[in-house]
Length: 265
Image (tube, rainbow, N blue to C red; front, side):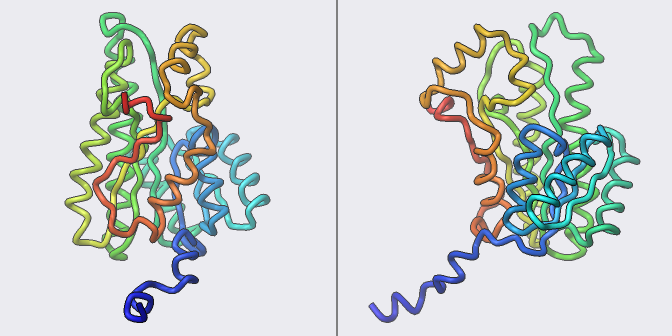
């Protein structure tokens, strides 16, 4: 029994596994919705936060809210995730303002729901520019800095629609599936540099984006979700803190599904 007890980490170490004090987290699309909730959660566990959003006013407001409420530092950075220059400039600004980036959360989101034959090429491209191109650009820019410091955690926000099919979301689902696979490939490439890469695949979460669904669609989703409701943005805090922290130190290349049991059926 004595050997077993001494082999375990201390109670203090276990309790501190989610401690992110002094870490720097960059979150894209963080001015509202899931990004805002995840930024708040990381800040409440001690991380300094870079709020990256294409709307400068929303980013500034969110940064003030997080800084005032959590006591950690938060800065606003305006960037369009699909523009290479914006991504490089945003990364450099965060490095200058907050220091080395320990945590990257690629969360910028955009969706259009309709049958495939009704999509224009411009609409298709817009979805892939935000999700696939944006995730690639930030993983590359921040990944370079993480390789140099030989540590870091990347969390890409995918979707259950990157794992299973549904009607009227073909470009979005294809983009999210690309993120799931990109996550796995980068996990292999970055592992030797001490960088972990995982994704979170939310189900239907109550956000401004999902509130655009027609009432019959929302009713159907609620009815077919085993927990009988939409998720809440705050319910992404636990998963993102877990994947950003030492609590998940042996997890990389995984996709954590947060969907109220929707994909279990």
